[in-house]
Image 1 (tube, helix red, strand yellow):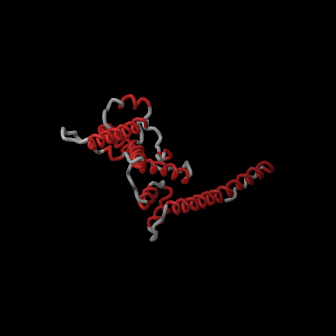
Image 2: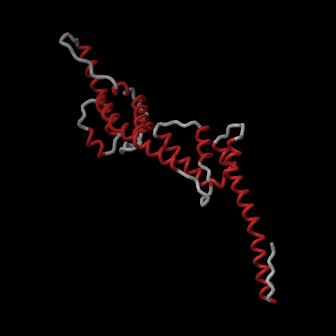
Image 3: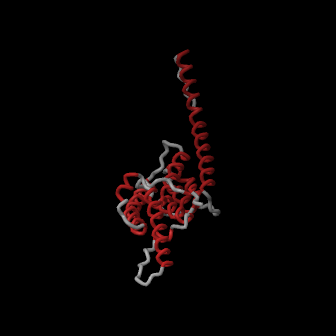
Length: 224
């Protein structure tokens, strides 16, 4: 029995490699993946009835494989590729076209990740989450990056105001995971917020005292 729960969503023209891998697995569960690589055996005049029957069975299975792939594509793409006669030719045609386009997509995603600069006007955690989305897209496009590289790249993108913490993280002997880095950034950001509030509060009190004294007797008191 076919396991249709493994059937991938229809290919719309993007994320080809992911769809290709899912479709290949689906065809494998149907015992049809071999027809993506093999061509039909050539009949000869000496073929007996058993050989002819085996060839007919091969053609039937190849027909199913081809149409599973076609039906795994959105209608506009189905219309483009339905004229291709064999599963092998169809698979190779898709691979040739969309792997090239996927390579361009991957370069765009990588460039976006490399150009990303963290700023003080947004929380570090929000920006790390944006970077994680980009890293996920890079993984989807087929480029695997180690967690160690991801941690190092995020640390390098911390804004100039975080230079001391940046250096602290770089000199840690123990390698950090992404989760550990996020935890450290959250604590440091909370500390920075608390320190900033502590500096602002005395200034606010001084302004209030100065305003109160001047309104009563014209004496301006500046508290430092």
